[in-house]
Amino acid sequence: MTQMGKILVAMGVVLVGVGLTLWALGRSGFRGLPGDIRIEGEHTRFYFPIVTCLALSAALTALLWLWRWFRGP
Image (tube, rainbow, N blue to C red; front, side):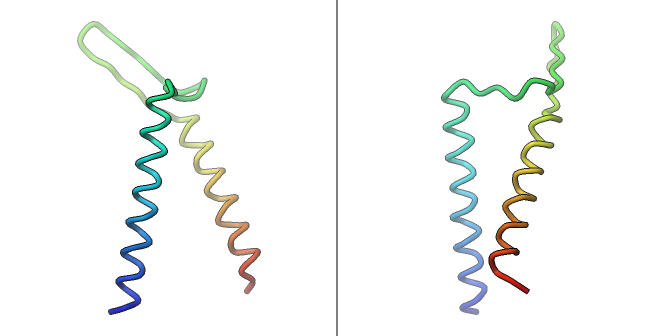
């Protein structure tokens, strides 16, 4: 039970960190990277952040790779 509690607390801290980062980016005027698909019609809006997703995936992959490399086998 103790291990599960630690995992839940860690997940909560990560979630708060992600939320604060997104909030700060929105407040600073970040609206996505060049290459994100944005279509705005008269009554509809469509936004697909493809380049943002690719950049986030690459950054997370690099962080996880580094964490595993430092941690060892």
